[in-house]
Amino acid sequence: MFYWFMKNLIAGPILRTAFRPWVTGEHNIPRKGGVILASNHLSFIDSVFLPLVIERRVTFLAKSDYYTARGIKGWAIKNFLKAAGMLPIDRSGGKASEASLRTGLGVLNRGEVLGIYPEGTRSPDGKLYRGRTGVARMVLEGGVPVVPVAMIDTEKVMPIGQRLPKVRRIGVVIGEPLDFSRFEGMESDRFILRSITDEIMYELSHLGDQEYVDVYATTVKEKAGSRSR
Image (cartoon, rainbow, N blue to C red; front, side, top):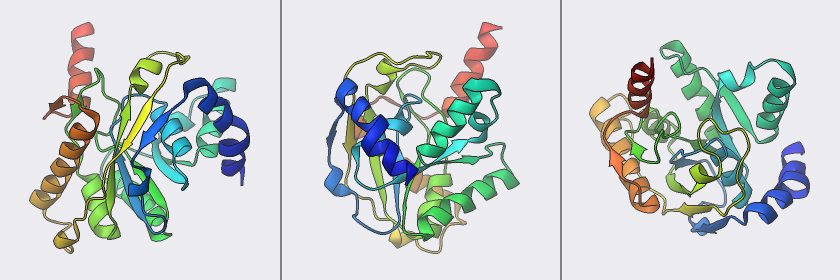
């Protein structure tokens, strides 16, 4: 109820008026049943505008760090994320990754829409980076279609490190559903998982006209951090 209230009566109208988001391909999202929206990730506000422009409710898996900040700012961020329908996950790997997978599958099993960023983190420079295979596991274990989504110009509105957004228009391009049912029962095959993930990333690169780099974004960020020290 609070999600609907925020989207339709408070934050939604304000954001639509200020940023005038445009969207194409919304008809590609199934009207019912579990589905994964696999999106590129350019800015923190991707998780704000994607749910805003589509009719169905979207649940994103957000890193748990966002929920642990202290003070008034931390309280505000935590409650905003909850209102936006985001679930905290631990990205430290191992058992935490398995728990995150189960959390996402729970959303899909309820017949809901799950939003995922296959890159695992925001792009440091606007390029599209190698996808993590967790999205492929969810597709196969959940038995659901995956819809590629390209966020356009959100990094120009709120780049990494910027606290307040700039007012300018952004876009959302929604591609046709991808069906990987032919790989049913093969979620333990790492080559199949990589193939599925790479196909998703190819579609994202095409939709958003982004340059693709076959390296993990986290690796690029770590190298940049080591050079700055």
